Image 1 (cartoon, rainbow, N blue to C red):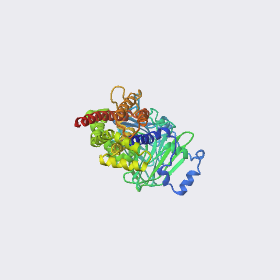
Image 2 (image 1 turned 120 degrees about the horizontal axis):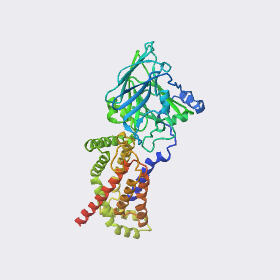
Image 3 (image 1 turned 90 degrees about the vertical axis):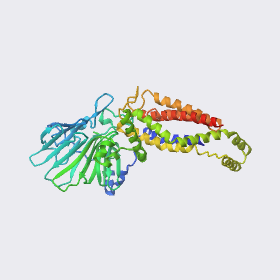
Image 4 (image 1 turned 30 degrees about the vertical axis):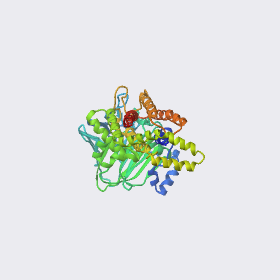
Length: 510
């Protein structure tokens, strides 16, 4: 029974984790698309990709770029339209030792973040210090960017004579190549990007991939939103509006140029608009300081109530030993210790069932022609000897959500990006390029399977399981983050040690 349950759970994990890799090109309807009004759906469906409304693209010829920076980030702002044109993260480098850039080169020629009504205006600039720049024209319009000295937050002030809703447009390039291999491509255009919107009504983040928008041409979002963002796996640019709600949100993509524009309107009542831009890593420590809901941009799935505490524990361990690989090992040990009573009880039950297996076999032989009688006799026998065939399943059922939660943590936490462990493991967010950890894990799992009693299975089934489980998990882990493989490998090793200890304790009690 335990073996069948374990196989079923393993196959479930294979589907849960492997599905995005095998079927990543399948497009599903997103929650935000279902919020469209009937008229808007008709507009969107009646506009085939070839006839997609044109995105206004303004080449920034004649403008001059001014940089604001602090120890964490460098932002380029062009005088034409006071447009953000470049974002470089100083604390993060790719595998070629280049600083991570959020926008691609094509976007830098058109501008990444535009403000309504200023696209064609080449504004005058003044810059008094490295973290502040202002732009103004002869009509009384003034745009100021002030970068915090010790964070990823930019305070944006827009002064103008118009009383119309303020509109922002964020551009981003779309590619068929995405970052499903966990590391970030050195080319920002080739990273998977999403539109993230925090719905005021639903009190949650709604996600839509840009490549899905590219297929439809245009998508309208009809809810009101607290903030809006363009995000890749580890970094994001979010617009927050100081308590004001955002509306009239839409995304439009040009098929030929594969350039997407997300437009956000913010209702204003006065001549001065004060906003905040968060342009940085999806690190809960930084994001929560800006807005508590901003941390929900990290996709931890439905097990976030497990994922977030696990991440906090890992960060705590890291603050002590300064190595996320070691932090994962400590977390693994902690999880095994917490589940030790259940696992010990399950191992004792399995051992007990193994000892009583000859009696069960005799019952099976005696009542082989009467299944109903056989079931009654076996249940009576197990009740008399206090056997519970399902007792070994509970630890596995508990481990499954922990496994999935940790998978989400390791897959989406920027803390592990480019974080080394030791020797050949230089990035815990990437797969083990030498496949040493998956092979070690598979070997340890084979040993564990060999040691684990299998009283409810016939020899042929047991032999199949002995080889099948290690192979399934080894193949599954080949292309997953090395940090996750490290967790499974060490957990398996601890399981072997626990099995040896349990066997010795039971033998000593005889």
